[in-house]
Image (cartoon, rainbow over all chains, first blue to last red; front, side, top):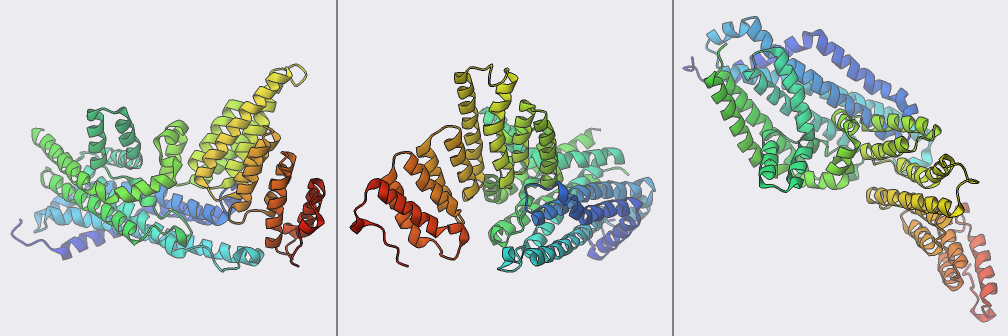
Length: 278
Length: 258
């Protein structure tokens, strides 16, 4: 089988097919609809807003929708699209042809990442539009507060959206790693949500272990920190002000960190899938 | 089965190894981020429990904090002190960015809590004056501690310094501390003019009239004449009052440049 060389074109074709399949699913439409409704509807939730400046409140709702619904979309899409190929036996047909297992897994991953990318781009664009319109209204209402012009840094909003995508890309790689080993779709999806929770809270466990003061605890903390990435790092651009820009170095570090984890998890997913009986 | 386990063990070992190599890349960013965000520290996150977890996961920080604030008000109306205290801590842990939460939280702790406790103990007529005093001072100290935590988040907020001064003045009667806090409020970027006037007034009440006069003499030339909030004419009138009180000789009296 591996006599043919690895083909990026075949990988791309599998990715395209995966993306198309995902976009056709009703669940995708439902999740996108909910997320869009939340971002648009955030304007009507302003009455519940006490503390944060209004524009910040709108941005928080937008990023919250991106994180929550994006994670749900990524986890379900990864597990569903992977297992549908196995359960429908299309994977057998596909892999009987000169297609590498690595191409199959990488194609599935690429398709999911493109799906998450489209979702994040859509929500980021909509959030920017909502912020732009509302800021314009506020400028007309309170011109004395906006003497220096617009205050929202739309570059920061775009950067935050990009980091959300990167986080979902890492999550997709971990989801695929679990799926490549798991026997059932349900297990893969449940594990995906566990991974999401653990990745968000691993720093707490690490700190708790470190506080215990024992060498074993310290090692356990480090091991946990190595096994799963720290998703809180991706919130580094969680601000609307240009002055809060974390700096090019920090952006590069977070990008490298996310890309590194995604690459390692994807590599291991390929490794697991190659050792799997279909 | 053995083969599956071997595959899983190999994958986990490789992942842990690669992760240990990747961790130092994000470490400086993470350290800086945690310095800015109290919700990302173990102490606060563990105390606030499940809600913080939800908020951190969902990203709906502002929304979660706002809903908790509404809930806190409902409990505040019922004078449920432990629940209000818990929710105040929760709200500022989830979203420490708005000064509004800190300010109102400090006011509730310093002003409302002692009244509730006195009322719960039978009211002002039943509770001995010294016990009432102790409760007031106890909660004023808690309110100041709360504001101290707020200042770690918002070191340049004049509102927090004004609130601190108000508690020191009205609840503790500590004129020197209140005067110092009003001055800090005035020195903050966009510090309110009234804080400067209050600083001088509290100094005068503390028996430090000469310091108050010196402060107002240096303040007056800096006040913008066309800004109503600056109240330059009022400051000048207070300078004259203090000069009379201190019997400043006419030759040494303050002479405004304009």
